[in-house]
Image (cartoon, rainbow, N blue to C red; front, side, top):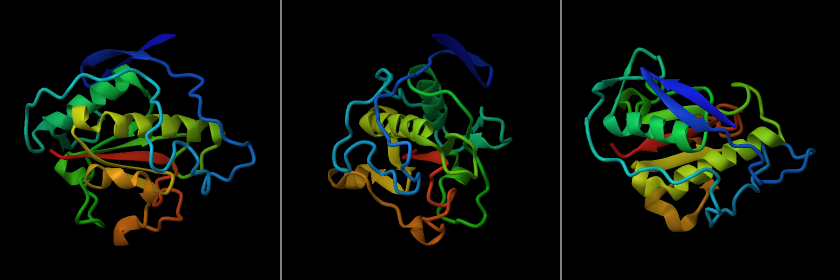
Length: 194
């Protein structure tokens, strides 16, 4: 099934990803459904390979195409288009002031949050599988997309600790990792290097 996702003024063809292959028990509590991909192996990502980021605007210089009124870097704008074209469509926001978190990449235009299911609610098995498909894809193609780290379902993966795989996320001293949003159970967070 083909669809088009509008990112800013750009209409991007999107391949809807159905039957993502990650099996989760219907009884599994979203807070502990960490099976997804192996904690040390990325697994086989759904979707297709993205194009490598060609370089471009540095700093928070471009209008955020997700409608926040803020700005994003060239790498973030590139990531949005590649995700939409290759793996996922759905609600996404990037720039945010994040005044409560001085280390956040959002006010720098270097981070996006992809809502999975309903923001503020623990997702069901199908949404957990969709989230793992996106998180795994971001990890697999981190080099091509300039991804620094990904957080999903109380787990974090980072390029600097790649050999450790998906590690428990502790909230970074700012968030409650058991909270639906603080632990990133309702959204996949991705931060970029530039």
